[in-house]
Picture 1: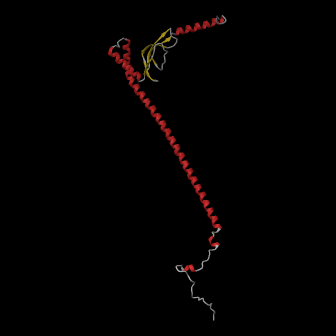
Picture 2: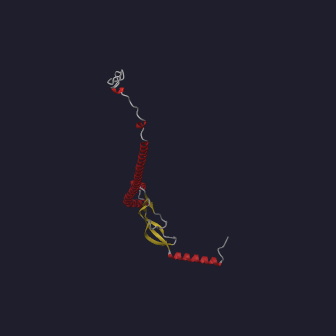
Picture 3: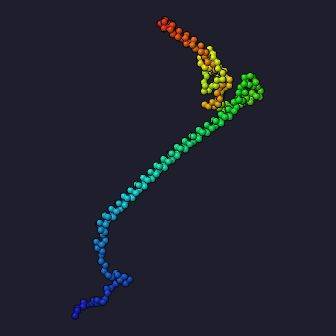
Length: 232
């Protein structure tokens, strides 16, 4: 026979305030410190993993940056090479254009040279008068503006690169091959010779050169015998 505590029945439940959930009546146990705190080993491993991931990301970014720099250098070199080729192309085209222009002008003026020769002969004979004179002077002005230059004068030394000798003679009063007559003047454009000057040339007489050499030798021997040239 068991004894019962007066005034308390096992079947009776503790009083619960109205509006409260039944779970409020049950006693709650406070969480232990071991359950709330994370293990120290897990924190260290997480930090190490994060550090390794950051380092690998940095290495990947560095590699990508190097690739971009290499590609940029290659593209820059290609651009510089293309620019140099384009500049060379422009200079070559400009040089060819000038050459073609000079050839075209030279060909045109070459066809006008017989007309200019006729004008020159008419002027020498006094036939360049009236309207013919005006036309001739206008033609000469136009060809001069196009760069045509006349050359060839009497008395200048003979130059086979710009002179064409049509007549040959000897003269005692020249010391070298000289143009003594201009049969047809020469014409040039800049450095390009369209037609050489057609001239008559004269050379020193061979006997005169020999005499001159003998006279010079005699004078030298006389000076040596006299002890040198006289001094004033």
